[in-house]
Amino acid sequence: MQFMPGTWRSYGVDGDGDGVKDISNVHDALNGGARYLAANGADRGDIDNALIHYNHSWSYVNKVKSVMNSI
Image (cartoon, rainbow, N blue to C red; front, side):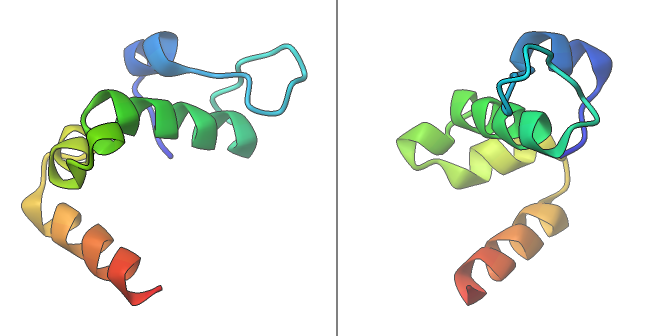
């Protein structure tokens, strides 16, 4: 996951329990990303809205959903 600093301040999580919300830590970033996607609709099943908020590109949304459906 990649975050803008302001987005990280709002959604950053200490995902590995070390007491630090580290934007460069994979566990923290994945948990923060999940929190961000959930806040933008993924928790209600609105995957399109969640993804378009993360990356404002419909080709990105379609690619992520294609990969998701292939696994």
